[in-house]
Structure formats: structure tokens, C-alpha cells
Amino acid sequence: MKCAKCVDEGLQSQVYPGGTVMTLMSSSPYFDKAGVYHSHDPNERSTDYRCSNGHIWHEVGRSRCPAGDYGGSFHRSYPANRD
Image (cartoon, helix red, strand yellow):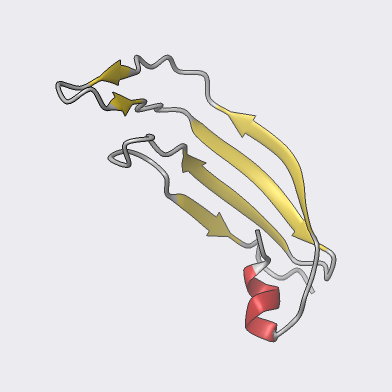
């Protein structure tokens, strides 16, 4: 994982994950008629990150199904500047 703001600014940094919160809904994985495994996990994962250059961001998203037909997208947001 790389800090998008550092990439935009031509900087290098280390990324540190903070706390992660996850919803706890149940799901039922299954094998389809072709024998392909599907896991449509409805749970959302929410994680805070910071980089060694001081950028802070938050990501929210769902795990991707191994078959690739569900989830896998994460939204990244940055807090407003508080200068």
C-alpha cells in the first residue's frame, strides 16, 4: 500500500494502519453450478491509516469474492485541513 498524496507529491513514505472496525453480518458462501466458490461477504471494513509524512486517511469497503463478482472496492477519504 502507498499513500496516494505522497505519490502525487513525488514523496516516499511508510504507511501505518490504525484501528479497524468491521460489521458482523452473516453470509453463506456457496459453490455455483460450475463448481466455482463464491463468498459474498456483506460486511464492511473501515480502517484508518497514516503515513510517515503526516497524511491521514480512512478507507471503507467490502472484501472481494474469490470469483470476482462481488465486493472488492474501497473508498478512500481524507479529513479536511484544520490549519
